[in-house]
Each structure stands twice: as C-alpha cells, then as structure tokens.
Length: 170
Image (tube, rainbow, N blue to C red; front, side):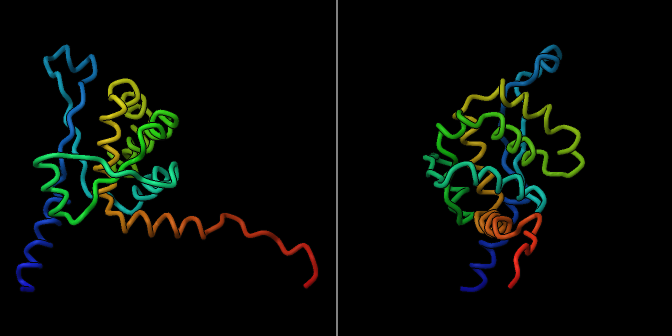
C-alpha cells in the first residue's frame, strides 16, 4: 500500500515540476511574425515567489472554489489540492495589484521579477479577461501548495518590521 502512495506522490511532484500551460493572446509584435497565442507555463513556486502569492491571498479573506472540468479536475485531484481562487469582484477591484502579483508568480525568479514584472503585469492587464485571470490565480494557488503560502502568510503577519520602542517605565 505504501508503494502506491509513493507512486502517487511522485506523480504529483512530477506534475508540479512539469507545470501546466496557460495560453493568452500574443502581443502585437509577435503577431507580426504569425504567433497568435503566447504559452505561459505555471510551475511549482519558489519560496521567494510564495511571498507574492501571499499578497494575493491577503486581498480577500475568503477564497472561493472555482469549477473546472474534465482533464483539469483530474490533474487537481491527483495533486490532492482544491481549486480555490480570488472572487471575481476582488480581481476587478484590485486589478493592478492582482496583475502585478500574478506576473511575479509567473516569472518565478528574483532576477526575472525585477526585470519584467511591470511589463508582464501591464500586458496581463490589457490582454487577459478577468475570468482567465481568475483561473490563472487558481493554478497559482494549486502550484503554490496551499500549505506553503498559508504558513508563509501567517508567519509574515506575526513578523513586524520594526519593534516599538519601550517608551514607558515597567
């Protein structure tokens, strides 16, 4: 029985490493060369990128389940995850923040985030529909593993940047 669980675990880890492709319309300069769709691959997130994902979680107190069908549902079950995402209204109300943090999660590298985050965020803002962005956020939460960003978020909330000085006598 343990071997079957180990095989399932390795299968889920392989899916995390391979990633999942998400297609968005290509920018105009790529369309000049005949490429109509741009493929973005969502992979397992690094620890530094989880900080950006935790910012997305803080936008709304409650994540809502998202209905997915067919092959996607099978992949999500194999990874032992739930399809949770930000509510549609939160995405629309906080579009600059959401696109910026989604861009950081997609880039998933410190150097890439510093160089291309603003450019990709601006492009996502104009090229992707809110429902596509909602599904993309769902995949980021799945690949970020809920346990990881929840623990990271709780840790960051407890941490303070500066401790208040003791101004009074004890």
